[in-house]
Length: 187
Image 1 (spheres, rainbow, N blue to C red):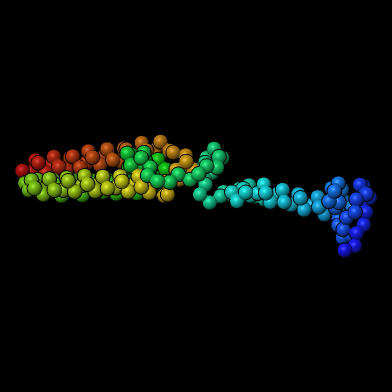
Image 2 (image 1 turned 120 degrees about the vertical axis):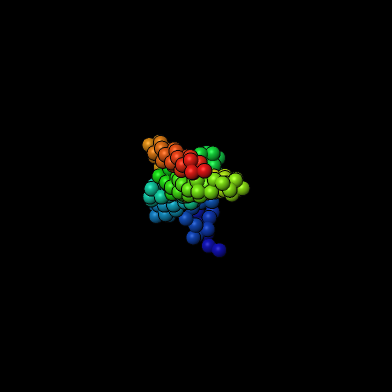
């Protein structure tokens, strides 16, 4: 093995060495620049976590969402209790009104069937129980899928949509009541 002397400390080192193992000095300027570049690359790699992208700050990591305030937070998952509690009205706040119309149509059909069959008490009772169970199941489903289907924490919750949905449901309740009362008048 061929050796040479370090020009900074005078120790014997390997002839192919680019840095002295005793004093840590680089033996030529080119080796010093290469080492500095390599260290900078390693630092950048160490600071570039999987959930960060320095090249493009607009990318959002998997499993995270960007809120309307600009924060990047973990995506909500699991059961959404507010969606379960308020059901179709909660969905309407995020712009999804299908559940409101489904509920309104079911309510109208229930009232129409009950209004025509008021003499059959067992059928009326069965339909009320069926409607109540279906409504409860719909609330459970809405609570279970709200975080994955609605833009929770991403879009603004619109109270105007909520009031419109409540208005539609109240009108349908009153219409259903009128249909049932009309059926009572025919008895």
